Amino acid sequence: MGITVQNITGSTALVIWPKMAGCADSFYSIMYNPNWDKMLSGYTRKHFQKEERVPASRSSFVIENLIPLTTYILCVTCQSANPSSDQCRIFNTPEQDPASKSNKKKDLAVGIWLTSTVLLLIIIGILIYSCLHIWWRKRRESSERQSISGEDKGQTWSKNELYSSEDFNKQAQSAQDVEIQSTESVQMATIIANPLTSKKPIMLSSKSQDFVPISLCQSDIR
Image 1 (cartoon, rainbow, N blue to C red):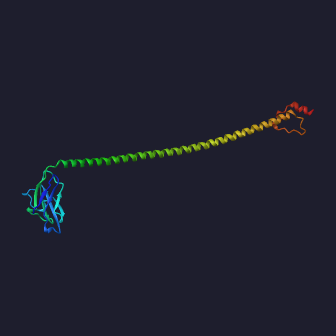
Image 2: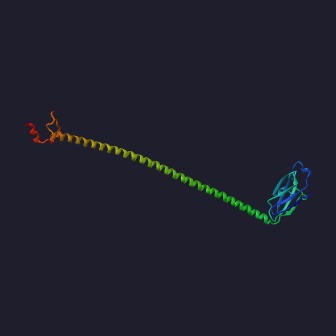
Image 3: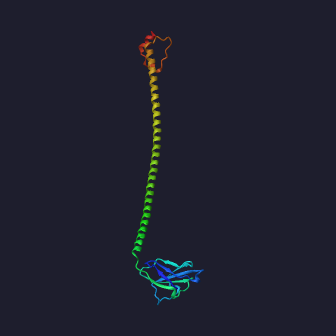
């Protein structure tokens, strides 16, 4: 049939086959299997582990994910039919090349770096959220304390204002009493000093009668 396997590496291989007239309106089936033993396995589809279906318009295909240092059997048929011996080829994969190893190491390193970056971002996000939550809670507690202290100050100011009003009233009442007493004392002193200047009878209060001397009363009678 003229099937060829080219560009074989430790993990890939290029398969080329001639076009078949019977597959013009169908597809090609590429079947391959590692560690194939001709004595134990026949050319039947059930003995192949992997199968790839390719459109009939193509005549080549790149097989991937092969195992290095492994013997493979590969067959190309039309419409998943059981292959014949002339439709199959055996090839060996070499040791994995250093470039492929370095690429895999790079891919692994990139994967680890991406995973670490994502985890770090998650941790940073959690820390930022925790800090903001603590800050908001402290601010709320501070606002509550300020409101409570403001209410206490208002109550204290009201009490002080009440006390101040009462003291002021007491002081005003005391001053008024002192003024009344002073007025009465002046009137009584005037009456005692000039008892005969007034033509009208003098009406003394009960308090002033107590302080009038007896000699003055006797002189008035005479």
